[in-house]
Structure formats: C-alpha cells, structure tokens
Image (cartoon, rainbow, N blue to C red; front, side, top):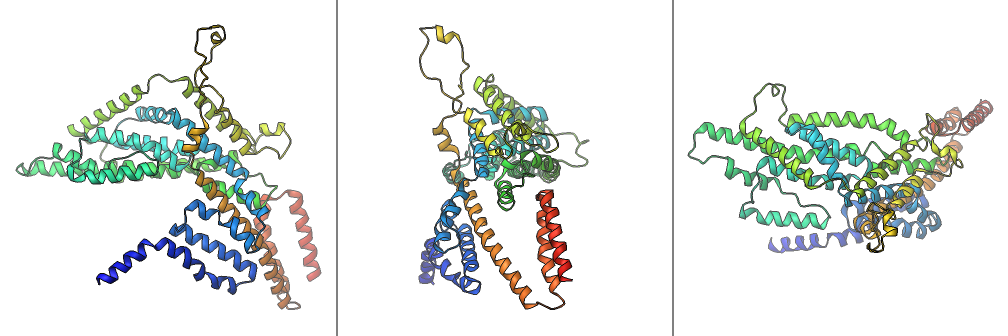
Length: 506
C-alpha cells in the first residue's frame, strides 16, 4: 500500500506532463473517424478543451495553439489565423481594461463605492444592496475579476467594523499567511477568512461556559447572524459582478465573443453594437440584480417578512453604528476630490456616452458624420483611453509659463504605460484571440463539411420523393438564421432564388 501511495503521488505531481503527452494520443481516433480536414479541426478543438480544463499548459499558451496546429494540419493558413488575435473586438475589450487601470490608479472606484454605501444605509440588507449596486455598476465597464478585486477590500473593512475584529487566534495564523500569499500571487488584496472573523469575535461577545443558558443561546444566535452576514457579503460581490457584466459588451468576455462571431459570419451586420446591446440587456440586468439581492438578503442578510417590525438588539445597533462610522471615516480619508479623479471620471463618462451614441439605431449617431462602415466601438474606446496617457494629472496653470521660479519637472499623466503593463491582464486578450481563431477554423471547415454532406444526401435521394424536402430543409434553416442580420435586398434576392428552385423541382 505504501508503494502504491508513493506511485500515486508521483503520478499526481506529473499529471500536467502526462496530460500534455497522452491527450493527443487519446484523441487521435477522431482524426480517422471523420473526413480528413474536419477530423483535424475537431482534434484541435478537443485538444484545446482538454488543455484548458486540466491547465496542462497555461491558459494563454493553450490559446496560441491554433497558430501552430491550424497551418501544420492544413486547416487554415497562418495569414488567416493570426489576425483573429487582434480583431477590433479585442481592442474594445483592451480599452475597457485600460480604463479600469486608470480608475484603480486614482481610487475613483473606492470613492464611488463609499458614497453609495453612505446613501443606502448600514443595515445588513441595505449594505448588501449597496455592495451589489456598486459592483454591478463597475462590472458594466470593467472586467468581472477587476470589479470583484476592487470591492473585496471595502467589504473587508465593513465586516471588520461589524464584527469588531481583533487579531486572529494563534492556531489560525497559518491559514492567514496561506491566504495572503495566494491572493498576492493573483494580484488581489488579502481578505480575512470566515473562521478568522468568527474566532476574533467569539472571545469578546460570547459568554463563558458557566453563563446562564439563555445567554449562551443568545450568543449562538449572534454568532450565526455574523456568519450569515459574512457569507452574504462575499457572495453578493461576485454574483453582482457577473450580473452587471451582462449589461454592456465590455462587461465580460463572452459578450465580445458573440459580437466577434456575428461580425465573422455576417461582415455587413451592424445590428449589435454597444448601444443596442445596452438597451436590450440593461433592464434584464436590473431585474436579475433585484432578484439576487432579495434572495441573498432573505438567506443571509437577516431580512424577514416580520423583521421590519422587530426591534433591533443593542449588539446589532452598535454594529451598525460602527459600520457607519467606518464608512464615513474611510470616505473622509480620501480627502477632497482631486483634479486627476475629476479628469478620469469625465473621460469615463465620455467613454460611455460616445459608445452609446455612436450608432444607437433608433436615431442617427455621431458615426453617421463620417464614412459609413469605417468607425466601430473599438475606435471610440481606443481614442478615449489614448487621452489618459498625455492628459496631465495636475491642474494646468497659465501662470506656470511666466513663473521662472516654478518647478520645471515634467507633469505626470493620468496613466503611464508602466502601470498598464503591470495591471492589465494580457492573457485575457490572448484567450479571446484563441477563441476567435478556433471559431474561424470551425467556420471554414464546418461550412465545407456541411456543403459536402448536403451534396451527398441530395445525390443519394436524387429522383426520389424526398428530394425537394431534403434540399429545402438546409436552405430554410440557414435562411432563418441569416435573415435578421442580412440586408433587405439580399433577403429578397434569396427568396426569389429559393422560389425558382422549388418551381423547377416540382
């Protein structure tokens, strides 16, 4: 048994290398079970899926495999694969990530979050609502991961005030160190664990074992209350980030992948853009956010149908007062709003307004003033974030030109490229490109495979009673999919062609 355990440990330690070597061999039958080129394309897709799920290679490195495998296997030439990694959709997403770096650089997200929390109140359910509204708003423009990482330190400070956190017990120090190392490795802020919160408050608030039974019961209720509030806070942040990311195209990567696929299949289609997506998705986002808040509040936030009439205990009142004081103190520590914060907020508003108004569909947008088809959302996003790299972070003054004693040091811009290099997750750009390259290979191979399959089916049934139905079904299917995104003239032309074919077949 000891030898078996040792072998199992060695296999587990070498699992990535084993998956890397044996996954291609296990997937080889796919190449021979299908037509040559279609089988090779499916082989690459399945291999990338296995590598992504097992992380045998880093995710971004796996996303680069189409550049190697598609040309070698004769699926697509490299001249068609490589441009998929730098589509305008990728640059739209990159502009959102750079804007997030500027907001984080000047703590604008913290000022917005604390202001919203001061407005909604300090009751647990209201605090959860404030956290969810703030996180979803940030996630509409920034990535879900960045929004969650920005809000976790604020939630940590509020939870400390609610629970009167002291130092954790000595036997939990190892857990704190492990948590801190892990989150720093991923670029996040360390957040105390649930056991540390509860352990730090247990000694202060819970009575000793010799206390009366009713006090012990009250202590257990308060401990359960703290545990639920802690869970509700931390659940609400990632949930609201995921919900808020659905409202805009730049909120989350899958939205951009859908846009990229639409442009790939229907190059002339401009039905889906930033403004039209927002009009469609924002009401649904608000509905889901409200449902999520009610669900979390009833489960963990202490909200009950009879809770509105119930008088609050002194412990809960004191905790809410401490939370209110902490939020106010944190907001005051930010000081008066700086010129750089005002500039970033103004550029952020311009970023949103110009994306909305480029081509809102129900009225002519500002893009109609330029050559049709030349401007996209990526042009707008990159144009705004470019201003961040030369706009001064200090208020300019004309007196400086005439004051010979003033400092001649160069003014720092709102954002430096060094900051962008350190904060922007470039691997996500490569992941998007890998998905687009994979979809491009599927598109080419699937289109040829379907045409060949349709011809074989038609040849086998030629002259039979099912010929018309066999040829009509794929045409109707493709027409139903393409019609909403095609030009009206093209649709009418296609209808005439179908009618003429049907008349000849009958």
